[in-house]
Length: 126
Image (cartoon, rainbow, N blue to C red; front, top):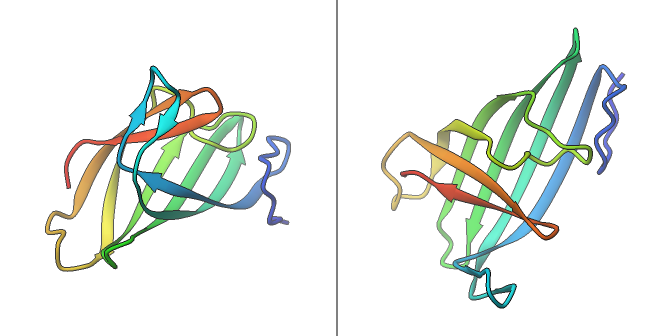
């Protein structure tokens, strides 16, 4: 049986987690400050823990302040930390399943980096 928790529990067979965050256009590593707010992201994670392997299917909805949006899906194998966030250094490919007219490609790569209780994604291409 799955639950809807904000904290990942590696002892459960299945679990659903919903995460959300603001999106900024820049992070200054020297000052530790974010610059302009450009949108919000909501992530729905469906986690399966089977045979000591953790599979995560993810639906991400990026909503930008100019009303553009991207909805994508991805699957990650063994890439979560103890709270259900992606671990630093994970590279994975996502497929865009819906987007506003400004986005034309159907997939992109992400590289995840963790910084002082923050996580940011570097988008390879859209």
